[in-house]
Image (cartoon, rainbow, N blue to C red; front, side):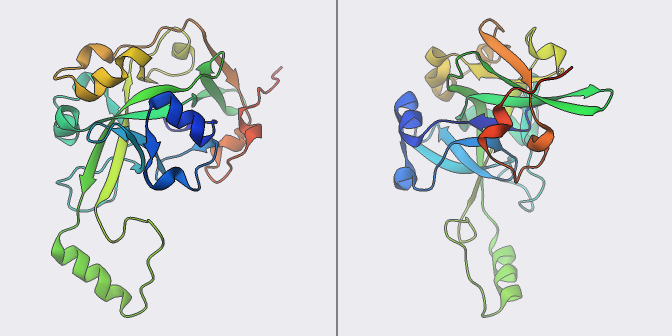
Amino acid sequence: MCGRYTLMVEREVLEERFDARFAGGGDGFEPRYNMAPGQRLPVIANDDPETVRRLEWGLVPSWADDDSGGLINARAETLDEKPTFREAYERRRCLVPADGFYEWVETDDGKRPYRVSFEDDRVFALAGLWERWEPDEETTQAGLEAFGGGLEESEDDGSDGPLETFTIVTTEPNDLVADLHHRMAVILEPGSEREWLTADDPGELLEPHPSDGMRAYPVSRAVNDPSVDEPSLVEPLETG
């Protein structure tokens, strides 16, 4: 699975890499070292491929009864079969920018996190699906009544409109990741990114990325805490 990832570049570098601009100018975007489920993170969706917008990690289908229980990963082998992902696979695909992801390995002293990246820390795109969920009128009204007259909405929290979410597609691991986990995120080749967004049937793109030019190294267990987001998380850890 893919449960955490990194994106350590500045906004301008990200926009140039994907030839897309942040919605609203990208104010507040900074390099990230521990991107976690439930956070609103940069995504390039097929309905507006020239824009980078923030969606919440954890896909909630449009037909769900509520917005809880978002799914952070989707198996490539069953995207066209599972009701949760089938429609999104057909109509709502996205690119998830990253420059590394974490996997955990069981050791004698507990689980050890490893960071997987290219040796040059290049930015790449993970294959993703996105959805838009809207509460029905009854649910919305009930929520407002619960707050009475003291409701204060936080800026850009999505509480006054549709909830847009995404999931990361996973596949079999390559030789490098196989030593860490039995699944890995689908890394798209740069020349295949637009095909993933637009093709009628992009299933052939969902293969493990070759391990050539990639690396995996142990990092601090501090990455286990999603509230910790600092450069020290990606520094190689000496193990003996």
